[in-house]
Length: 231
Image 1 (tube, rainbow, N blue to C red):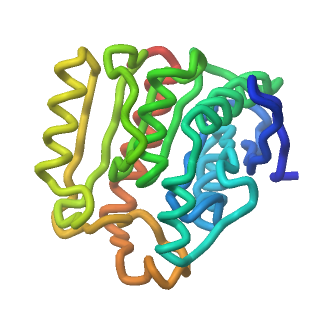
Image 2: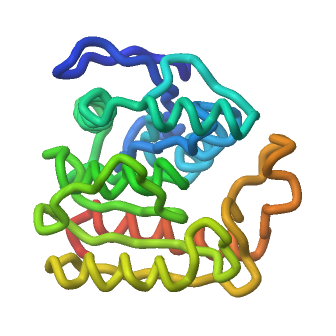
């Protein structure tokens, strides 16, 4: 039963939950690209479950997903950060309440828009203690980076036309200056959305299998260490 609803400080939020076969393990929230809660995000949740994690993707658009860039941009720009923060924090509370939850806190992982939101969650959600950002995008301002409660892992394509290598380096420096423990990786030859292997026609040809696999291994290892309290 992967589709769930959970309560937040602002009401009720739908989402997609994947659980480890053992019924026990650490937990992470998974935050969508600007397309919405689509097949790719669900697939990432299932991959985390196969690695032994509870993984919950809050449906920030409330069922509205698209493959059209113009519609995705409209939905992203219309996103209420107050609502998104409630959704993310509520999702982290929900997975931490699972009977088999193990760990010192909850992780957050996000892609593009979700990459920015993942860092936002680390700064604002009490349960979130580590964040992974893939090609960070956040058009709605930024949180107070000095409030980050744990380490940040970032993945960026060296040929990303939306988040340039220079922009990624500037973000890394800003986070570090705020006192955050930051590790950013640049992937040579990779472009924006290199991790996305979906059939979305706007993403076909961007997937970089090698960069995606290396970044995934780094992400899983990072979260296992950070959520066990040994990072």
